[in-house]
Image (tube, rainbow, N blue to C red; front, side):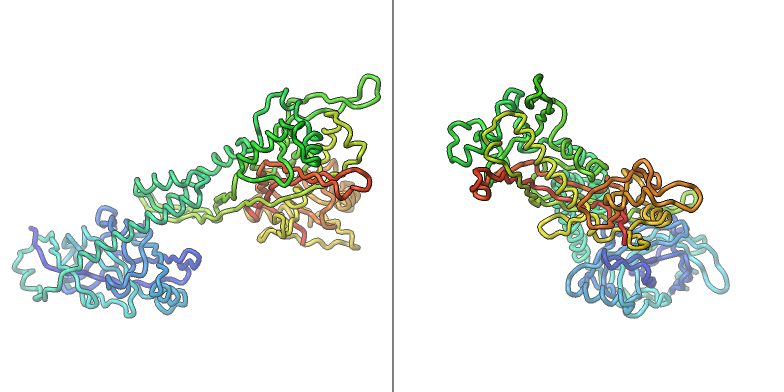
Length: 602
């Protein structure tokens, strides 16, 4: 038979464990209920933790985190709830940033406040067993609706919580005993005031507003990666901030790939005859004489680029098409000079890549950038668990961070003599362009490897968090031993980052020393043979600080190119000889996506 009893809100106590607190995300994990019997006024109560017995919808939708069960003292929200295979219900709660929440959060981290109480209602129970010691009831339909931090743990034996008023509800009991027997056993229960339904409604509304605001903010932050549209989709489908993070990371490879294939603003899509028509020297002379009447085409190209990027040049802008149209230097039939031959393959970036150690080793080049760029990255992955059949896993979120790129200007100066200035052959202009590429490649390389961050990018060597390997440097040579050389690889491997385009980079002095330094006393092998060491290629870059060694996955080195070459002729420096200095400027930035992917010598 079925019987009914009246009851108000019920509470159970728990404690927050210190190890479950994450100061960075302002979250704490706690177990708020189990199937442990609790003595109530009607008998022993067991909360059944089968997934069909618990109503978790309200808590999953952002249940409130309160103080002492007071709806007016709202200090946080429930981010997720789950029931484990051990039949224990757990929650991840996040504290707010109000003054009150900050105060409580500080006490929780210090271990001062650690008592937790969960408020719940029982809708249906069944009688499990009877004995002389009392009856045991199992709640087969119950619902948690809030979690509170409490100063004094709840006294479960009291039954109805004393620190909060709540609306009474009817519990349906499946019992084959006569109703009279139960009625005689139950004492009279004083009716309690009703729950503040409006307050609970307001809390749900506030939680939804916050969800939408958080998603919109993240969408705006990653607008360059389609974040705005993605946020709208997440809001419409009722997704959480954690869902948004996963979606952004899933979309990253596709978006970065499309960036690498994007067309820079300085690419004017010239035809071959227009590339041949363009003269760098003609533009230089026009700028110096302040007369562009004979260089109208070059002026038109510069103005088109300036309009596209909404920026005035210091001198004049050179189209990327011209830099793309590389020419191969060949001697004329009589051997008296050079002539230009059009070489259709290649581009400015490809030319830089061929002369740049970092790029040739696999650095990720992002070309055609506009404005600052923020690239999301996963700084901590999800946690995996072994679970029993039909068991539930413990929820966990990966931690997301970002790598930013903002344009920094690299300049180069190419001196041109008076006699060379009088030349107009395409081959001579190509010699100049090659000098510019080589200068830019060297400057970008050095910044990518050891830039200090003052008016330049922060390179690998100065990036916070990269691994280090001590070098004993016997007799001050700086050459590593075999064990030390392998130590670079081990350090990266210990961080699970031993993948991608792995290589060593060092100076010619260290590379030369490694070629004549034996691995051991008997094998006859050397540290470096055939430009390989420890199974990885070795690249040489002079200009690095003496004795520098860098090892790692160069795919995780990002080089951003804003794709506009600004040329500023300077005739004052070489005025006495009638020549000039051609000063060029290019916007570039460098970033390391994962510091763990690299190791440097200490």
